[in-house]
Image (cartoon, one colour):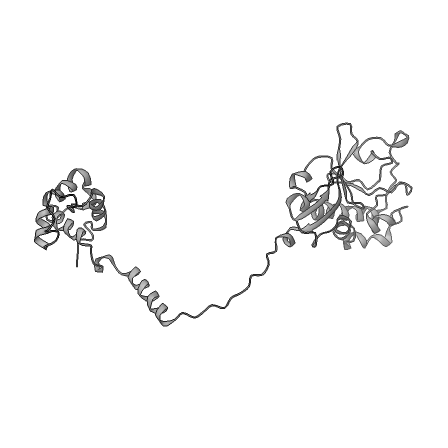
Length: 291
């Protein structure tokens, strides 16, 4: 959690909602009583003795409600709401511009994570970043001057959820520290030669690479037995393994390999079935040309 990039909620609210050109350009033409506070700090229109800075996240109202619970839809002191007066055309245009900015440039960024809020719990004193789910509840109201978040309680009265809210942009929170760049050393002639040899070996065709002696011996047995068949299509366990076991000793003698090892000895080098299966797949009917 980074507090250095955070700003008080009030400042972010004023910059994004109240001080915008679309709202401020109407200020000179507004003749409504007690409207000056709206253009300065976002105060809702109403009784100047009961200044109201509580904006609903869902449906803000231009006119303040008298009493502590009026903004949540409950009748205030005296049994009624502060009477709404007709507003001038200029005030209505300013309110519509601010309302659009409130929804798109303030509430929406809070709910989609573009703005990260850090707040203090009024009871426990815990201070932390608020989760996105904490902004999507119904009936939430923000005191944009004090940076306090209220929720609607079961009895309809406001319940303070968080206070001393500060905001920061998510990009500022995720900006990584620039990595130290280290100069890349030039490869030595020996390293260049090794890299070139590795590259050449990787691209070297299979038919030009030396075949292991065990694979040569298996092919010596199987190719004469299956001259016109694709080895891949022949069963390894039922056909090829018996053929190799039967002709292995003869093939070894023909090439002069493994002659010192007797058939009954533990290290007699008859290839396993998986070796034969691998030879079948590597040197099929399309790759029978050997060195």
